[in-house]
Image 1 (spheres, rainbow, N blue to C red):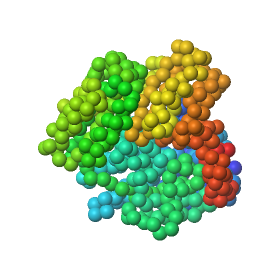
Image 2: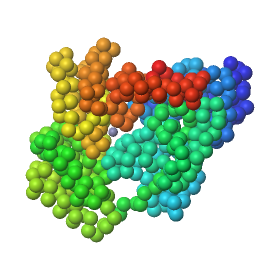
Image 3: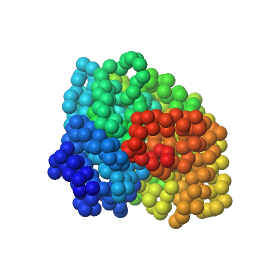
Image 4: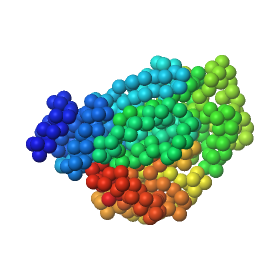
Length: 459
Ligand code: ZN
């Protein structure tokens, strides 16, 4: 063991090692704020060559490695055991190049999402990936989980924002494919093996990101609807009328809207009497006329009976207050312990699904609390249950009730958060035995010694 640490030290130097006894000062991350990290050692390489040498050493010794980004994950995909090595990309946070002609940014993967967003903005571009953890979440984490967020309806998931990628395989082989082109069909597109595989197939070290034109205007509104059936109609109507510029269509069921607007000092954009609310955003390129066009679109939707009330943000302050309501998941803490879900299913199946999952839960806990909100345009719902202090059996009952009804509806147990440790037992709800067998075959081929984030996604 002393010998192994010494060999690591030879690769990364003193600055690149944090020993077990020094880890107690480091938080285990967003989902485990009261815990500190535990591992055999935390290693912080400074470049791709060092990542490669570290992985080769670990592979030769059958040493398990858990790679770390900003620790904002929600499925415990970053949990390390006391005998595992943590590989943190925190010293690899450089923005290496912005290429205006190709609209690309080349980065090391330890850089935070917010830093990338700000650098894009400064260069006159826009990087559309956005999520609540932007200040801590790293691009490496975003890519290894294929993060989603609020603008997927227009710009896609993290996967859709990556043109080139460099990854280190388990045995230390560096796969460098840092191309800048959108069209590239030269054989298998291997970058996708590393995107969304939660650190189990390789460690992504550098990325070429696709930048977008900076929007010249942002129009934001809260809308109220009196029936679920009108939600997809309103979505399609606005998507069409805005010429593909609709950038967010966030839906809140009344229970969630009531909770977030009842907090002290919270904005009250609309009365809380309606069953459904939408936070809508359109990003356009004509600042002089976009506002009027947005108002006309909403007026037409109102005339068609697609919604019953609306309020448009008149200032940047009002716009931010509207988003703060949507993002105020912290208010769920007033319910005590909660169990959260991130499921995907076709829009038309949602009302009936939400009724079905609630039956066994209400039977067990008549006083249960529930909040539902999500990225409706992406078929993604976040569901949060509060049933009081729940032991393992109670949690299993809630999990079973929420996950199993997805199978018959072609749904997903994870729309955007990943599987990690938390959802392992339910992977088979969304994936067939043939799919899981192929996943395991790929894992066995790319990481034969099973050193990369072992035990995550599947056993
Ligand atoms: Zn989300």
